[in-house]
Length: 592
Image (cartoon, rainbow, N blue to C red; front, side, top):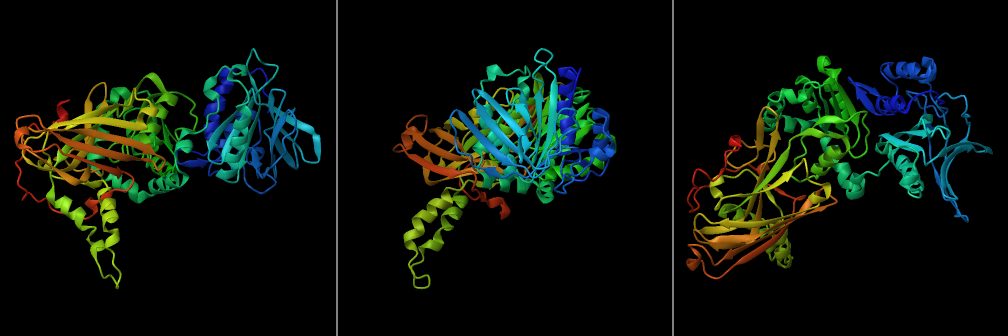
């Protein structure tokens, strides 16, 4: 593709806006992806207009028979190991076919080969005919950028070497891969070559266009990611969230009550799911909404949005991860539902923060704006006995003439290492709760890798402490109205419920006695956290003289492996001997 007398600004708009349309993006419900037949001629018409192509050329198929939606490159790559030569490194890909954008200068190839070279400090991508290696189309990687449109699609754009001052792009190819593995292999080779070059040597002033490896892939176990996106790609799980009316109504109210924040603004919906929040934003008057969704739910979101045509014209569904996709403009507002169990489970908050750094203007707003984790000790003898009894199976001494008792202790430890997810009566709490604030506007991604919270409580009555109860709330800090969404005990139950970490060794306390400890959470690659809880009684306070010797109890839990007690509904038992708390025990969040 030869482009002359076109300014950088104009073409950069094409390089973002048009790429989004050409990639795996659904516009008003129509899938416009390379490698698939388009249900409309939107893309073909736009390419025809931009490059003066006829419609047949814009919808041609490559020689391997795969339709190309736009004139592009269909790559069937087979990595070939090339021995290292003196002062030269190269990575070679055999290409089954290649169709370039129309050009007066770039050759076409019947049997193309792509190679990455690093020679004398110059890194290049060479595309040439397999039988005619001297016939080469070269891309200088110093001025070449690779944009990922979807897991199997990319576009490669290179600046003209003679246009350093005008900074115009001169050459571009669209790339279609057969699968994610081949796409990833090509990207790794591209990055390896780019890493050999100093960023100071780049001729392109727009550093936003530089390629960066997805931090999601670096820190996430592939099997966990696969299960995660499969789960959220199913309508039954989206329905479960939509039917959480506490959640859905809180988001709807936060958006509609702060309409002034949305009117005429660009909104990015991070992890859009079914697209419901994008539709809310459009209802509130957003100029345009980019619904970013990495799972197959993007297809359903496009259908739902297309079914609401008055809003669909202002919503673009972008399939991909927030860490990887590119958008044509900055956002005035980020909206998302990144909360998991105990606020941070699934580690989507990190993607929310990355999206903030990549897409949000400095003065932009985030819905939600901050989150608070709340903690308090609890007394629940029934729950304690229930967990202990789960391991009774392993106390059998004659299970088909086999003694199972050697495994009773490790089995008991496993049961107590599961955080309990359910809804409990607030009267089970034995002290005023404390909170830990996470400000989404300022928190750094790495701050969420490890969360350390000191604990200090004063017991309101004498009882046994069976563990630490946790819940969260989030604030939508709109210009007009501040709206809270809470998962607190005693409030209407949400699909997040509450979390309780049960200690295998309870603590005995008296009224007024101090409890200290630590809640330490460490993120792991399965998109969750290991939780360490330590709680100790102190010989201080009004009831300390009756509290006996100091006691300490510690435990370790895996938030990825909870005991989903709420799946087995049980009535609350208030037969335990402790007093209900004063009215101020749970704060009314609507007062904030």
